Length: 171
Image 1 (tube, rainbow, N blue to C red):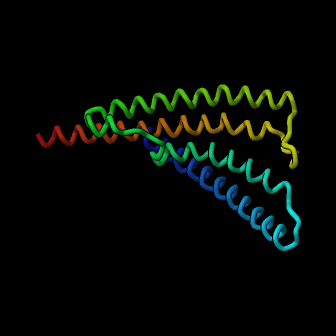
Image 2 (cartoon, one colour):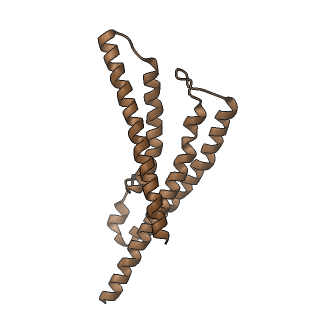
């Protein structure tokens, strides 16, 4: 039952992550392409294009954290695991706990920062986008990372229990 719920959540989150990242990157590529054509062809530059790129880099980096957890491509130092392979599972779960703590902190502090931006009504310089939209990505990223970390830990637990059952059947 829990596996089905995780599969449905995985499909929904993957759809959201991949399409929003695709659309964000494509919008930046189009605006940069137009800016390059205008700059070198007509000696005119779009000021908002660079601000858009900066905002999209922030967005893709933060949403990309969830994708990195999903794909198990978070930066790791695995020298200890290579020296002592028996520590792989405990260190993996330690890593999951640290990631969960980090994601909770991102939700908590990101929400505080978003509320502060809403109260002060700050906007980006050129495009006049309310900064609350940019800061709202922090708690969103925390929630996505939390869900993805739980999914990956669940997969590891299932895989480890299947491996133990298989070894018990063989012996």
